[in-house]
Length: 564
Image (cartoon, rainbow, N blue to C red; front, side, top):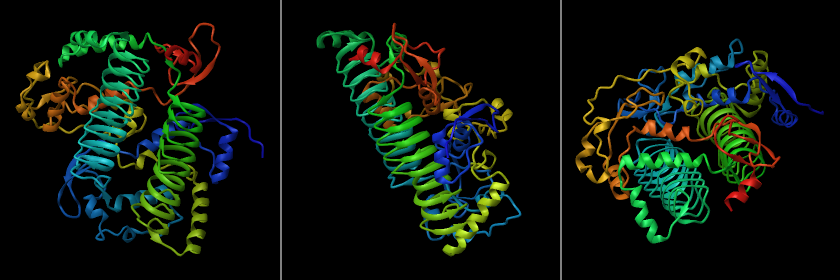
């Protein structure tokens, strides 16, 4: 059958979107109907199902033990301490239900989801890292989420891999003794760096590679002893750097202002795409045949509308986190395995549909919390032949009700809009979220007394006493932002030691506000068609830089001539 571009109207936002011939071929291959929602609305709907970093103190519903949980204390969901949840005392098949064809699928799935126990947090192989979620292989880490393999580090959220002695990172890997990094790799003692690779002993860098002893620099390659892109000798650098960096906050603010001005003067590539073929999107490494993908790396192939796809995943559409050689996936939130459709948190296995938080399961439909199971529907065990017959009937019934082909509705998500990861990437105010029919959770009343006002934080780190860890410090935003501001924060002992060792002034924002400030420096998950801004160049491209932005955007050829 020959397919053509087809313009559809999103059933959610009512805006037009295009389904291309390659899309129809993929949907036919996995035997699902074409989408009725546009790519952005589909992304938002999936992200409503992941809460990475909004946590609460509550009681385990099985043991009464005090636990940290991603589920608020007053929710309808049953929450167990994760170790108890993993134990033999909790059998998810005990909650199995027969499918009722007089009801819709999502109604029945919601009933099962409300009844079955859920783990308080999702962790694996962690040591002394209780304050973490969606993490594995952490040691001595604090307040971390969405990360794998880290040690003696704190305050990082989202795709942080193999780091040690680092604070405040986002989507960075293979780093040590680093602070405030975004999308940076293979660096040491780099502070306030973005889109950097193999840099060390440097401060305030953007789009730099193989640089050391640089300050406030943009777009440099294999340089040393540069300040605001001006070359100095080693002796001159050591003398000049004292004008800008003395471990004080006021000097840092002045330098950062000058750095931000320099960023607007240096041309940047239309998108961060490296060692990749036939791709569109941003932050793409060693991948091919990927369209409208963001933060995909390490041999990703034949994917579309994917974000945070890593490590050999291929032949998939519409994923927020696909990893560990995931294959043939569609409309998933964090999945590995093969042929995974309309599901969230699938850890290996194959032929999984409309399921959540299942480990190494095969041929399951509408299940929650299963481990090493096969041929289950709504957590009820069947023989292979019976399972296959019922699944065919369920899919036909879902199609009649226009349910099949749609991800889980936002309304049955266990998380509020401002709890879920969606607030990181598609931020909304409470007013806008409610107007668009999303749920919203108001912050809990604070019961602490601030002991240090923001203006009273010592300017220089050398003037901060060790006793400062006892203080409750006012956040500069004072809860008036839209960034889940905690209004105040405390320092851990290891955190203060890090600032002193690295001669870094104390932060003025709480961890949440720092996290959202990092996100605001990233490009959106959206593309615009533009032309190269280099004079006399006619090249065109798809870029995450909107036409009204102030940055100078070049095509790859013009950019390479500029920086190399």
